[in-house]
Image 1 (cartoon, rainbow, N blue to C red):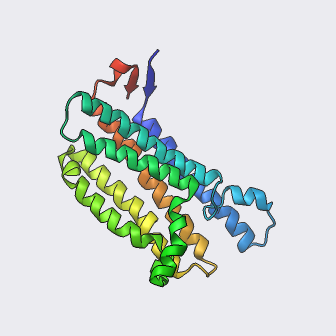
Image 2 (cartoon, rainbow, N blue to C red):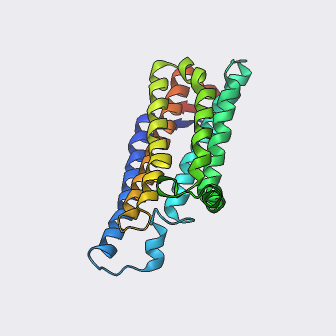
Image 3 (cartoon, rainbow, N blue to C red):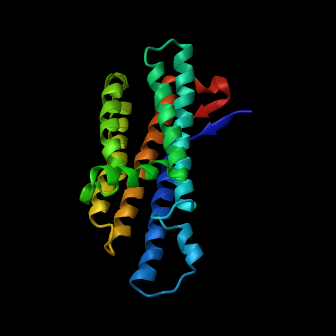
Length: 226
């Protein structure tokens, strides 16, 4: 049995679902907030990007998990080939597995209150886990720099674009949200944050599939990437 995956079809469906799901959540919020249309609170919570443990959080978690799986598969091939960057592929997989877990479990949010109290954080650092996140991101950037530069030009650009978009949401809009956390526009920033994170993750998925397609004979393991 051979499993066929079309990169083009994955791209269309993936980004279509990302945009539709985030737009739907924003649409429901507009109906209730600005048009005073009553919607069941339980149904509204399922698609609210500002809530945890709902459909949007599950979807984001699954996207991150898929990146982890793809990076892990590539790392196994790289280990077999004794590639010098096999450790980086494994590290990439571990990072995205953790991000997937964190998306559902909200691990980073446990650091907000202690860090806020310890540093008296406010404004852009209101969500104080960012104080820890920024140096970690910089260290990871240094660790992965030579790895990214070693990639084929197309994959290299896709990785950089995906990373910028993802971090713009996860860190950038989180900081902006800290300034407006008490305003009525806060959920708009949260929607923008989640959408950017999803788009960045989606680009990672497409780039990994394209990389595997162009560099491996995937059909030998019963997988064909078109």
